[in-house]
Structure formats: structure tokens, C-alpha cells
Image 1 (cartoon, rainbow, N blue to C red):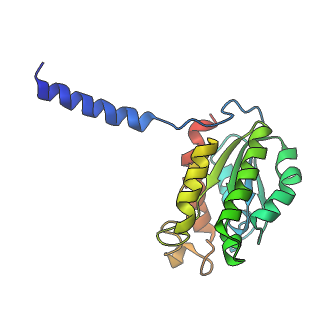
Image 2 (cartoon, helix red, strand yellow; image 1 turned 90 degrees about the horizontal axis):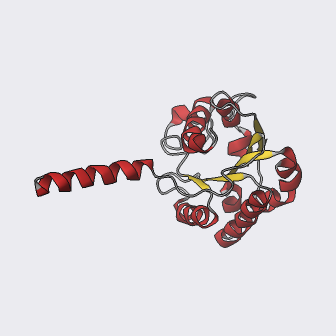
Length: 202
């Protein structure tokens, strides 16, 4: 066979295999029954009517029960305090973790945020559930957290869901105020999260 053809086939095969590759995720065999969305106002659904939050939209896309454990205004310190009752005690299969906005607003050092999220992830995984870590950055917005969260997810073998506010934070038709999505924005977030987790919950 012509050497150029062989080279071409190898390139195509490499691209195909790269597209099929999934990072190693801890607790893929999780036995829990529920998807728990654990976060702050973005998870709670601030700026939308009841039932228009992203966990409600996600519930329509998956076959597992979805629980909204979002609390408006929560920091990662508050997350640690309520982790047991709001997450671990609710038979999680997968926990979608979304925090950092309020840490930033309250000037909590990024290192503390990452440290707290590390504890959150480790405690969830110790209970036998998978974790998906959400990045709320978009463009320059919260960019300093993006790489730190990506690195943390890789180290802890968690699913990483990047830039969920991309094309929302800059689109008035997708927002209820300067920062929070509206119902349309939350629907888009749910679709992005579903795309990231669907291969791990079938």
C-alpha cells in the first residue's frame, strides 16, 4: 500500500479513537439511585420560576431521578456544612458540583475554594458516587478558576464540565440579570450538562 495512504489512514484512525476516548472516572459502577445537583444560585435556579431551573430541565433528559440541592448564596464552606444531609444521605449515583461564584464575591481565596471542593469531591467519592465538577467561567469571566477546576477534576477522576455560561453571560435574551440565567439559559445549561454526563449514566 502507498505510504501516503497508510499515513492518511493512521491519522484518520487516531482522530476517531481520540473522539471515542473518555477520561477515567472514579466510581463508574456507582450503585446509587439519584443524580444530585449540588450548588449555589445557578443550581437553585435564581432568576427563573419554580420548575425552570437547570435540574428540572435535566430531569426531562435523563432516566434517573434528579434532585435540586442548590442554595442561593452558598459558598464552598457552606457546601461542606450541608454535604452530609443534602447529598450523601440521599443515595447519590452522580453528584453535579457547581460552586465558586459566591466565594469570589466574598473574596475567599481561590486556594481555599479549591481546597474545599477537593474535600467535597473526596467525601462524595468515598460514599461510592461519581462526581461532575462544573466550571461557570465564560471567556475572561472567572477564567482564573477554569484551569484550577480542570486540574482538580483530572486529579480526582471526576467529570469536568467546562464553560456552562458561555454564550449565556453575554446574551441578554438568556439572562435574568447581570449574571444569572433565565429559563432559556437554564435549559441550555441542562443540555450542556447532559451532554457531558450522558455517557457515564447509561
